Structure formats: structure tokens, C-alpha cells
Image (cartoon, rainbow, N blue to C red; front, side, top):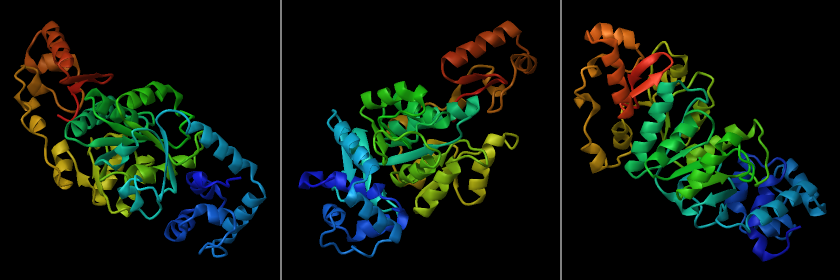
Length: 368
């Protein structure tokens, strides 16, 4: 049971864990509760007796002793003793201001790493967990360019596009924020544990509204999507099928009155159909990072603006390479070059980061 005034942050956590505390109840608590400890202890509080019946019942159970909530509070208290671990509450002056503006802001945010980063300008990047090679390459290239233009890249650290976005930001020694659906003591997916360590080592941040020990649960991931979009100036969908969870993030961004961007793809690629639907629904079509920066009214970094365009590549194979993969044999036929010269040229272009070798063949890399 929380009794001390130093437990004010954990009192907000206890309120967030009560049964029935959904969007409407969170908004009521945010607007009218100045002292969460007073409400928990049934003291004089403006919303006492006016909360939804299920929440009132949860408060009654908490006052009698709720083992589940008590366990989460003690685990959180221990987690906060570790270095660089923070708990931001909705009334904290360091709570990210853009997130506070949404209709359903989290009452608490667990943050490992740079808590100040959550208030910096961010672009959310999301997409399918099963991208094609070109989609992953595009995500990584865009994320790299965003960080070089002063934006923090925010995503969900899922497999596929999310992971590529975080890695692209790290490639440029930029900062990135990973919003988890689990607790921060429970890395999911486990294969991204090394990625999480790299994010922290590069002054990034891991964020969750769930207590540290919270295990993966399907219902938590759509819930965390509102945080990804809510932290950000806009959301870019890189590659997504029609049933991709990233479309949920895009819809939430629209509801939050944030910009939504989508990268088009081939009409034959099922992973592009979600992006095409977003474009029909009014998302901004994106071909380059500059398209996003202009829509957000952000300046294009001079170094990027003056970088040589890949259309200036003089290699004789370049004119035959596009965004759809082609085989080396086809390139030899079109260019009238011996196959060994074609393979040598492709290897050189790949080493320069200009060409991507996929199972279907060779194509231009990134967002060129």
C-alpha cells in the first residue's frame, strides 16, 4: 500500500493499473486529480464517487489490498533503483508535451535512457514485420537521413521495418526511441536485445507505459501504437500490407491531427497495398526525406541537400538498374557487357551502397 508522499509517481501507476481505467477514465483522472494518493486513500478528492463503477470497484479492492497492483508497484520501485531508469507521470514537467496533447495520454511512462529525448522533434516510422529486401533497405536509408536532419526516429522495435528504422538511425550515430508493448525488463522480441543495448549506448531511449515485468500480450501492441504516433510530429509508413498493424498507428496519427506519410510501391507487391490505401485516404506521398521535411516545415540539412544524387552515378550499368530487381543475365543482355564485367560492376556498386542484391535480383538501394 502506498502511504508516503514520495510515492506520488507510483500512485499514478497504481491508478493506471486499476480495472476499467480506459481512455475516458484516464482523461477524467488527468483533468481533475491533483493528488493521486488522496484518491487511492479515499480522502477528499474531486472525482471520488464519480468514476465508472468498475474503477470505483477497483479502488475499493486496492484499499483492501490488491496483490497484482502491489506486485507491480514493488517491481517498479526496484527497477527505478537502477541507473538511467525513470518514471514520468502525466503531471511531471518533463512529460513529453506532444504526447500530453492526445486524447488518451498514458498516465505514466517508464523510460530507460534519455528521458529528455522524448520531448525532442521526432518522426515515427513503422511498417510490416515481413518486409521485402527493398523495403528494409528503404526504411534504413530514410531513418539515417532523418537523423542527419536533426530528427529523432521513433518506432516500436518490432521485427522487420521497425528494426530497420532503429538500425538506420544508429548507422548515422543518430538518436532513436523504441516504444515497447511489454515492460522494459522484458525485451520482446528477444532477438532485439542487442538492438536495445545499442539504442541505449547511443543516448537513445526505451519507453513503455507498462510496468517493467509485463510480459508480451497481443492486446498491448495496438495500445502502444498511440504512443509512437503521439510522441511524433508525423508518422511515415514505409511498407505495409492491408492487415498490417502499422495502419493502426497511421489511423491514430490522423486522429491525433498529426501528418501521415506513405511510401508507394509496386502494384504487384502485396506489402505496398497498405501504403496505397493510406495514399488514397489522404496520406502524403513520399519519395525522398525532403518530402517529409517540407510537409513538417523543417529545414533540409545542408550536408544532405548538397549530397551528390545517385542519378549522377556514371557506371554503365546504372541506367539499367531501377527499383524493381533484375538479374545479372538481363543486365548483360541490355548493356551488351560480358557477364563477368556485369558481376564485377554489380559488386562494386553494392560495396558503394548503391545497389541491393535481393533473391529476385539487383536493384537500386535505399530511397534513391
